[in-house]
Each structure stands twice: as structure tokens, then as C-alpha cells.
Length: 534
Figure 1: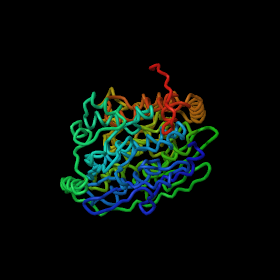
Figure 2: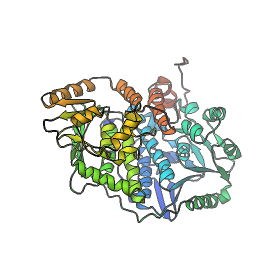
Figure 3: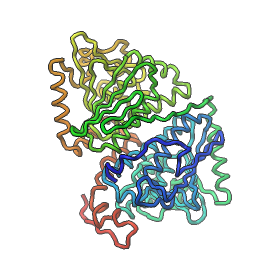
Figure 4: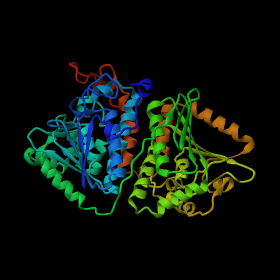
């Protein structure tokens, strides 16, 4: 599944157009039923048997999770269950994976990870508690979907099991954080997790409860009733007033060969130079939620549609004051459910930017408005270049949103990560009332280079040309190492290990070679391994 086949992937959808999920709202509960249409893969060439999923299935799930948060705040608990007989979910579709390009495999895993993190974020911060009602076979990515939920219940019918069979059957790792969530989130004992992760048939019944793999089991005769009772109990825990919901209107960007244009965001593509210019425009009627939804969509397009782009040049245009005013309003009303959801979405989008395997250069010049929430975009960059102009009109500014309300994947704010040796300095910048001109920004350590007008164009050109001339593989590894200083969290472990281990394993012949386990899955031949440990 190369770039040509990815170009037609639609990243937006609506419940009216779902082919694989049913969303039923019965406040305070909602039920998301996975009933994958076998004959409707995202890309022709494979069948989605046994509720296996591809990117198209997950795009619908991501849409449902987001719409529940914004359009249905009256929902306090969400049950995810399977719509097929005796099947919850068999995981990612193996034929889809085995025939996809290496880059698509990794980006698919990254997207599904981010969707599952959004589920956990909703449980933790939005008062929407997710329960997995595993009504049958729950394997691989299906169990990883369940692991993203707050609680997991398995039908006790003597046959249904939970499993992570990727290592014994496919020669790869669970791609959406299964190993990390089993030991970090569910706190399964390490030796039991080792047995579980090499046991293709999985664990069922009371043993799954004893090993902490699920929270409970119920017989099929009362499974739905018991799960519903538990969901209602969770829903009753949160009684904060919320609503009414808002409609997430379609983004409907204008797409041409060299550009993607939204209301607030513009993405210009230079295919020959392998660069993209991503600009956020702040004008009359600036809407932070809309702008960040557009930014999120643009980042996904860069990942899936334009994998030859190596460097994203981040720009802004508009008023510093307009951004700071919008930020202040969100900060002051953050106890309101909608302001809170907007801030949470902005934080998730910024984390998607942090985790995007592209070099990021922020360019601050005349007309820029890198303030507050948009300053976070610059702080996410690998380098920040700022023009030193004669009259000091080129400026950046902080806002209360730089103080940690938009955290990185591993927890700190981007200012705290930038000034890891000087935590008090990060706080000083957040509380700095006046904008920073170029000299002040350089003195504060906020820019990589402050460049005079006479050298501006040449210095940028040389930096850009140098960056895109380097090995993209080495850059991906270098950036992933440098962007996340400090201690790790479960979330950052998941992505760090995906980038390093799964990326490596997917390219090894033991998995994807002609006689590799993933390549030969479902065929009568046995895989041939190179037995040298590396």
C-alpha cells in the first residue's frame, strides 16, 4: 500500500457513512458496536474477516470517539462490543499488513495508537468511561482496543479468550501498545505477561481475571445485562453538568496537486525539494477548535498521503493579540466542558505533531503570530529561526496555555522540556506579560537562530537544503530521541518502542522477508528464521 494507493484515503467521515461501526446513544450510555463489513476494505484486495480492521475501520472509530466528546456530552459511559457472533475483534487485518509498504505499516500503527490514547484521554479527562464488552474472540489488536478501555469484561463460554499472538504467529510485536499496557496499565506480573505474549491461543475465563488480563467474566446468558449494569455504575460517578453538544462540521479542504487549503490552515507542498510549508492564519473569526482540527487533518495527510516530504516548515500569520485573547478565554473558562474539550483536543493535536516523523522547522518572520497555543507549535519544532528586523516588529508571546495545560506525551510542557535544566525559567516565560522581540527571544533561549535581514533568506535556504539531504531514517531516530527529554510515561513508552522496535522488526526478513512469519501467515509453509539474536 504505497503513496499512490494512499492518495484517495478519506480522513473525514460521519456516523451516517460508517460501514463498520454502529453508534447508539441512550444517555447516559452509548454503545459502539464493531460489525466490520467484510467486503468493504479501505483498499481493495483483502477481506475484513472476523471483525479484523484496517485503517478505514479505525478512522470511523476515531471519528466516533471525537463526536461523543463534542456532540454528546450527555454520555457518561461508552460500551465497545462486537457485532458478530462470538467475535469481539480479531485484530488488524493480516493480509492488509503483509501487503502494505513498511511506511504504511508504521503509520497505521501510529494512528491506531493515537486513537486508543484518545479513548483513554476521554476516560481520564472527559467523564466518558469506556468499557470493553468482549463477547467473543479478542485477539491481537482487538485485545489492544480492549486494553485502551477503563475496564474489560470477557464472556465466559468456555471458548472465548483474550490473546496477543503476534510474536508466535507473525514474528512481530503487538502494534498498538499491547505489551506496555499489559504490564504498565494492567500491572500483569512480568512472567505471566511473558507466557501470555507467547501463547497463541490466549487466556480465557477465571484465569484471565486472576492474571489481571480482564476485570471480570460473565456467562453469555447475562453478559449484556451485567456489562450494562457496570456501565451505569461508572456513569453515575460523574455528575458534572455538560452540554448541550456542538456539531463538528466537515472540514472539506480544497485539495490540489501542490496544496491543501482549509479555513485557517494552508499546506503548500514542494515535492521536488521534499518540503512542506504549513501556515496557520489568524484573522477575523479565528476559531481555535476549528484551526486545530484543520492542523490535525493536515498532519494526517502529511503522514499518509505525502510520505516523500521530509521537512515541514511551520509558519503563522495574524495577530499575537488575537491568539492571546482566544487563549485567555479558554483558560479562564477551562472548567466549562466545551472549553475543556477544546483544550484537550488542542493538546492531542500538538502531541500528534510531536510524534510526526518529519523534521520540523519553525520560521518566525514579519506577520507571524506565534503566541500561546501557537507558540506551542514552534516549541514542538526541532529548530526555531527568527528574523531580526530593524524596528523590532517581529515578535512572539506566551499565554497561560504554555504553563502545562497542553502537555507533551511524556507529561511536561514544551517549555519545561526545552528548559529541563532551568525549570524556573519556563515559569518566567509563561508569566512574561509583554511579547518577546527577536533580541529578547534569543536572550531567553526561545530561538535556535536569530538572523539579520541581510542573511535571512540564505541562512534558511542552506539550513533547509542541508536537512533534506540527510538520511531520513537517521533523522527519524535522532528526532525521536531528542524531542522527549526526561522521564517516560506509559504513553511515551508505547510510541518510543513503536518507533524503535516495531519499525526495526517490520523491516527484518524474519517477519517480512519472502519466508518471514508475517509474509507466510495463513499459508501451508512454515517461516524460516535467521536464528542469530541481534
